Image 1 (cartoon, rainbow, N blue to C red):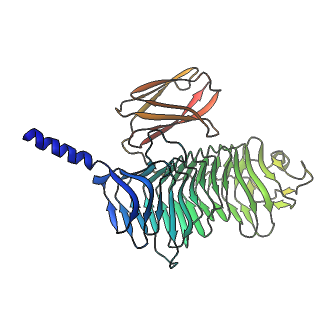
Image 2 (cartoon, rainbow, N blue to C red):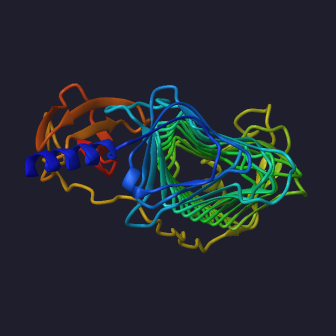
Amino acid sequence: MKNFLFLLSMLSFLSNAQTNLSGGVYNSETWDLAGSPYNVSGNLVIFDGVEVTIEAGVKVMFEPSASMELRGKLLAIGTASDSIVFTSSLSSPTIGAWGGIKVIGTDPAGSGNQVSMQYVKGMYASTFIDLDFAYQGPYNFTNCCFAFNGKVNEDGGSPSTNFDYCIFEFNNQALDWCQFDSRVSNSHFYNNVIGLIGIAKVETCYFSGHSNFAMNPYGITTGCTIENNNIGVKTGFNSENHTFTNNTVMNNDVGVKLTSFFNGTQTFTGNRICDNTTYNLQLLSQNNAGLGMNCWCSTDESQIQTGIYDGYDNVSYGLVSLSPVYSDCDEPTIVEVEDLIIESPSISVYPNPFNEFINFKTDSEQVISLRIFDMSGRLVIENDFQYETVIDGNDLIKGVYFFAAQSEKGNTVKGKVIKE
């Protein structure tokens, strides 16, 4: 009898180990940790008037092509030690493995805090959050991590969409245009193809490793550090996109690429633009651009001009005016952002730098999904292993590579390796 009761208790435990979701959610409910993981098998609709609350530590997995349509309200508040995870159900997912979250909040338009996320990890969606028909904001994302998505957002909701203290990495594109007021602040962008486009306020953010360009802002950009990208800043300035101040743009291939510039309506001052490989600045507009009161790490205007591409190089374009040149360059302010790594396995990588072979070793019993990317964000090696694996790097060219080692629980360790 004791064995029979033990078997029943085990069957009960196993039956509660996963909660399956599909179809409609018609009443407000809480997705608690006891029911985690939650497996979404199709298009899940949360109806208008329904509020879904997700507890810290919950994992929501989506089968291929599955998605969520949110007509009601979603409150996902994790903690630094127990984040909430939205991800694919596949053991080795790739970008776009599930459809993402589409938000519909239109009747009546107003202030409803329809989506609030804190300490959330959103991974492997085609577009993680689509806010094209979202009019019940503000929509707030704080201390979140978004990785391996096609895009993190599609458009922005009313009255505002805000990303604060977030991490964006290995996405095809991190943030896209927002039709209403939008802000990203104190956030880090790593190794995306494109960092952000068309965000109204970009404040004290860090950008590195973007294979296309780090940012195309549209509004006010201040206090950011943009380094080690293909193109740092690619943008045009007009009466709406008007302020770029106190930013550091260094060690990119091209620092700043200006496609338009309307003198008299912009504030482009206090920036530190130095040591970019091909050009510190390219002016691709017929208008002249007055860019005085910036620091170019030199006070010699003729020397500074060698790093600028303008009408002196191609008569199709206008000329850049540098005076007055700032001689003192302020050091950039980089705000630390909490990384959402929970009980992550320790990863040993050796030798590093390497010539032919490189070892990855862990003390965890979990299966580790290892992905290695080149500087452009292209996946070059993919390998699942337990305890230890040896990677043949003979086919890799010399240079810097980034790796992401993800455990079965969705926790990720990131790092850099060098091929000599």
